[in-house]
Image 1 (cartoon, rainbow, N blue to C red):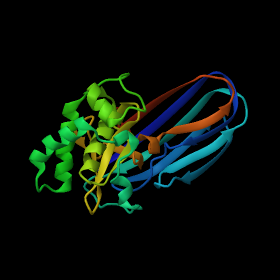
Image 2 (image 1 turned 90 degrees about the horizontal axis):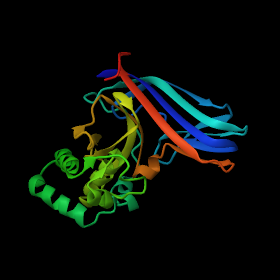
Image 3 (image 1 turned 45 degrees about the vertical axis):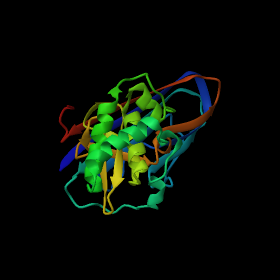
Length: 267
């Protein structure tokens, strides 16, 4: 069990002032599974109207409007999470699992995905689902290398395999494609992990009793160094920021996440 302090910072810089900025944010972790959020405070600047709600997957959302002109939009979320992967599973709503068995455009398998799955199946006959997922995770980790700027938010699992490179989003989409082709309920997760950097993505599979997390980018099971923010069918369900505004400005978004254990320094 770990007690983790987290700070999530998002900044959107506009090339010129905008106004009537309507936004939806998914950046608030919540209690469920093997984590308990003991404190969570957010600050949005400039001030405007803001409300909290949930989406169809049960993820916490902030939605609001900034009417005044602004060239900078800032979101800060700070808090404390207690994570215990070995502890009892905390109650959480489990929707129709068929949602997590079917392909999406980003996780549609192709020739390379099916070939990779075929290699995995030589090792996974009669394995429990969790052990199968470990084999699939290791296969994904060994199939591409981590590289920025090679893929984008529209890159599919099959395309990432063809490119042989990607970021955490791509690793996760490939793992989802393998699991769903094998009819294993699986979902995309956005969250944070110990250290300093950006938000992270991984995969959860359902074994009939509970959800288990797998981080194919780092080739490790998700344990008590990870804090979950949201989940869905793929990246598009978990997009952290969506919005519209009045103005002709270009925008640049940056995210910085810091997670420390027991108030210590980041790893």
